[in-house]
Image (tube, rainbow, N blue to C red):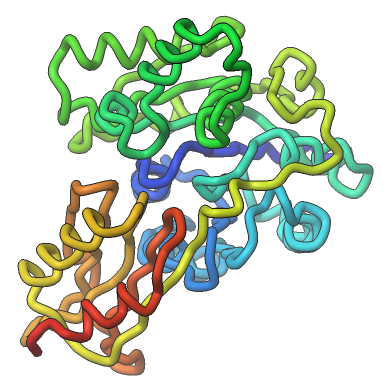
Length: 350
């Protein structure tokens, strides 16, 4: 029987840096033939498009795009049987031409329901979960931007002995950490040494077993040997990775967390757009903004990414002759008003 193909699951909250990590892995693959399965929350996929511009296969192999598979409009942990299983089976048909598979979960996904699928007989003899990597945005966790303020939640729990519940985002954070074989404290260049140490201590307190923690700044690239080759067979070790949902048949996300997107056939001045997006973040509870922007008199596509009130941008590739120069932005948050978002963007001067 052929060896099982190793699968690495990369999880972490919205905007923690999962796609950037995978882009760097693909661009520095050391000859590995890597397939990537990207799971987006919402109908409009952004991360898969970003990854398709990376060189995935060695020269002379199949087209790089053929190794990027994107699942949208459904969190993998909720749609394992309907969405993940058939897609994984198609990938496994090509196992002889692949060295490993990387799965990027959505920022709202619980790792365990996905990993349990690797116990199914359709997958078990062909693939194994080599390891789970959980990425933590160091600055965001320290300020409570992406999740509830963890320190404040803990202080409130200690002060009120009758408070025995936790927020859904807190549980999500803990469940992602509980499943990890490696935790990456990401974007450490945005915090000072004291904050870095505080976040690391917070993460260590949440871990129920010994797990390696690696710190990483935005300008750094982690070696692929750090990210691959755990040989953890995670699907056989789930009992050592407790979660809040171990005794539930199914789980529900916080039903207020939604995704909406705006597609506009027009260009934007980047500084004006960034300022308007910063305003929107103040007006609505927006956790994450990401997408592509058409810029006047520019032949390159602009990538715009926002976590809370922090926005970053870069040009990733030229617009292709056959594609429309549209501005496509995805917004993820609570109780979002699509109409208010779209109307404020449309109101910007051309």
